[in-house]
Length: 257
Image 1: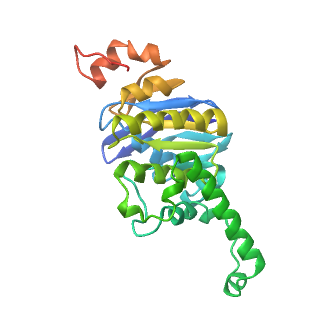
Image 2: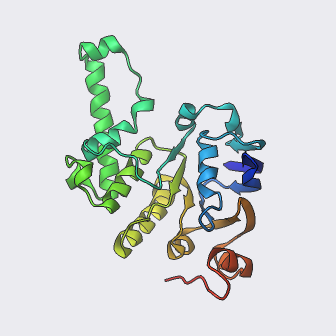
């Protein structure tokens, strides 16, 4: 579904991504891990076309992503949540989710001005989709609550919900459990698996919580200083000495609970 082929991205003389190649298969939960500064979020920014690589190629379902503009990526079927939630804090949970449908709704100013039946029907359909996502996330009771009043863990779920409402083929999750407590982390892990199994969404995950990564991932690529240092199944990564040293430090081990 998604292919990075020898991607190089430099900022001045620094290589943020260095000759990186990996392949995400449709239906996978694919994790991209590594220490801080490894270049993981930069990978997402290349997919979303916020950055343009110096060389190499990025393809999604056979289409060259580097020929697309940032605002076109959502229409290709790629949606994203952010490491630091980017929500409208004074808007309700429902209205934040509805903003995720904005790129998909065809707008006619005259129809909107006169509040024609087609506009009302579109709004009803949008709210129905939002209610479905809120139900999946377990947030239905908070639909009218302003986001600013929610605990951080719930705000992260709203951010994911806004990405999900567009029904993406590929969902990019950037450290989704950062700031969450163990119970919230466990619940989100179950949700990620449900997205794959029940909604047929392929997930590309960046995460530092190794228990979550090892428990939900089908395949893992490990980065360090912009380069790929390992890839494989979770148990292979868990026992890879180079990964353990680069990610956790020499003499440590990757524990899974």
